[in-house]
Image 1 (cartoon, helix red, strand yellow):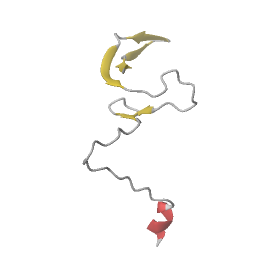
Image 2 (spheres, rainbow, N blue to C red):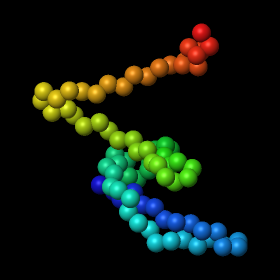
Image 3 (cartoon, helix red, strand yellow):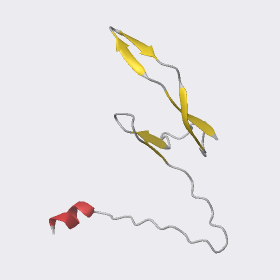
Image 4 (cartoon, helix red, strand yellow):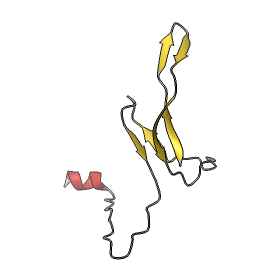
Length: 80
């Protein structure tokens, strides 16, 4: 598990003042060395939300599985 950290940043003239880092939550990253060009997370522009991609866990015996529906070319469907 790796800590997902946040720090406040304030512009003071031409300098930046950094706050004290704080842990937001912990995430399991499959590639913490960042050898791939795409990081497995995104943060909203205002910093209020984050999205973390993670590998799905194998379902336990008898557990329901979740499905994801991917709609390709959805813009064209709106025109019809």
